Length: 116
Image 1 (cartoon, rainbow, N blue to C red):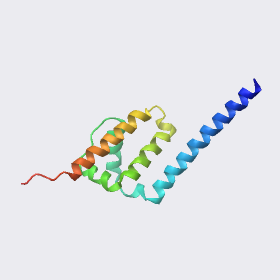
Image 2 (cartoon, one colour; image 1 turned 90 degrees about the vertical axis):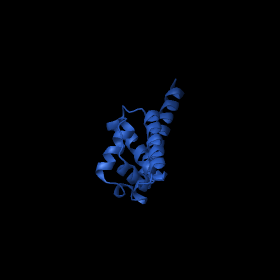
Image 3 (cartoon, one colour; image 1 turned 60 degrees about the horizontal axis):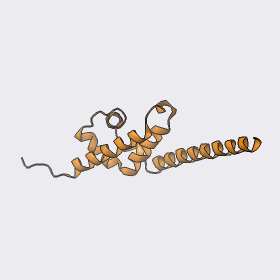
């Protein structure tokens, strides 16, 4: 029975260390790439709503999101999911929504505008 408790403690410790390392990795990515300075607050809010609440994102904010870059976009989404305030969010759904928002914005920005 004691070995089961030791094993349980080791598993919890391993999982906790992994989560802390993931958080530090995301924070480092965000800091190294100046992610928080590349997109304005109104567009952050639109992107957040699009990803986590299934709202829409404007063409202007899609442009800012694409300029932000996929590395920053992914790191910011992951950091949000790690925040205890958002513990009720489904990570798999949020990541799927994040990918869909990114792909939609990328397609919108990459597509040629119609002639006037």
